Length: 587
Image (cartoon, rainbow, N blue to C red; front, top):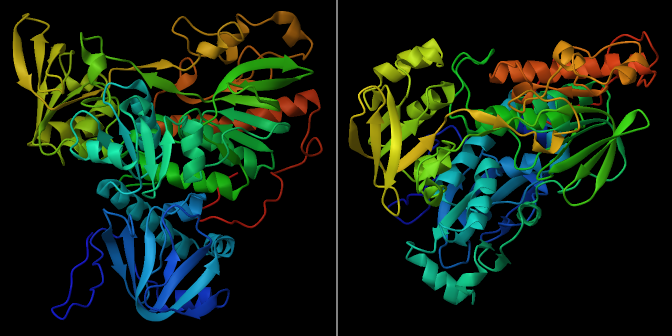
């Protein structure tokens, strides 16, 4: 993405190799111009700066604009150069985050400026323009992540807090770079420059001047401009706990139906789906879609209808009160909800191998995203697991690693993996499938190799691998629900007939009904997606259950007399015009 120069020294516009820098048509510029302001620019003008919120959507009419990372700092570098017809900004403009680069006029000319809210309203009414801008912004965000732009996390690979900050940044798709205290040559210079003692790490360095010493995830979120870490105290119609595909679908359908909807997540929007490099069997995307793009589109769609999305915000309690529920958060705040949708998903199981915990976050990972792939550096890697997540990870990592060893303890790939993935994995020249194989030990302070065992013959051998990716099933995030509602023996939430079998009979007798299809042992509390006992662990089914949960919320409200509209009224409430790109869902 760095720029080139003409022979005479003039900056040349960055070519659009990745579809991240499209050019607007004359008609599109004319439509935007009717709502914006034309301004002359002067060489050296800063149109916006790294770390500051976006206030305007800018289109270049003439002249050129150079994009910098760490502008004015010791590591200043050019990210891109834009000319006439291109527009500025990236994903943070749509999501209210701070800018991750600085825009400086290099050749004087003219720009078209629209207030951000005005731009959102316009592209929301023009799906072609909206899709063009969204795809460009998604592409720019991934390019920035690949460049290591944004803030820096300086910390030890052995520090749990370093791992926490890195996971939060990666899961929220925030451009950043990790500086390893143990191995990075830059670390010592940064410690001296900012007068940081090693025992004060991890620290977050932002804009070359701000230092946050071991910040909480909420403090890091505020720095970047993510939504407030705690929902406003008060009441909502629906509280959605978890922002994976099920939770985001519930947010979209709840808000579009006129329900006051708050969606919270302890770490990031997207859940496991956001860490999936490519989803090829999701309805409506014949060429596939990355989990990150699917999640970003869902987040924008939820905002479009007025849903409130809050990250990070961790729920710690659920208490019935006057036919409603009080939802308590770990910071002590509370929100009252007429109904609750539990969509907290699952967490990946850890691999039980001696010494592996010391390598987690440095060479052992439980997700395969652009961030982790960038650390492979053309080395061989290993993937453990036989499900779709493992197959998708292996295919994605094969584009970055020199070789991928897929370790499966079963005797064939067909047991848990979709056929289309099996075919791709078996055909890929860089992927070696090792059946009946389990990891017994890890070697090296930073992973160098694995000792693996054939579970049929007992034969062991050493396998060279610089990174290990683990996808061996998951456990539900329901510890905070034990003793509150009915769970199965593995901790998944019971719903429908299964919940009725163990529910408190007098509570339901007073309502004259039993639990609805996705309703738990508590009236008005529903479960959707992976956290629900008996659910199909697929993105499409999770999204479908999230939407269905809202339909059942309406049914619950009608039966208890707690109505958004008169009983028997047809259809959802009218919805205001869209401020965000993205299509409305079907009713």
